[in-house]
Length: 140
Image (cartoon, rainbow, N blue to C red; front, side, top):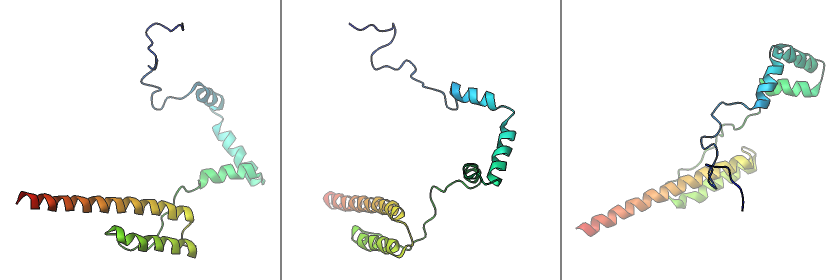
């Protein structure tokens, strides 16, 4: 037999609301207390080290000045996709762009997923139209 604290049921969280948004951990609060009033001096020191050639300090400064980009706009001419039969032309354009070095393979993969979603939407719209036409014929 296992002992349970009174009022708690198996599978039920002791804190169903969870940590409130914006709440900081004790470790974060302690670090902030230690650094309070020192942030400017620490920042200045990191900049000085970077200027002296410390590559770690330089990386820290550059990461703050120009953080790595997550995405970039991709400019690529794609044919219109109005039916699923238009898909091969679109994927061919993607492959040609990768081969030419205009876009990266991962960008092509992301665009491929977007094209796939668009084709599914086109197919769903086509199916909806077909059903409407069938229903109209059946009502007459």
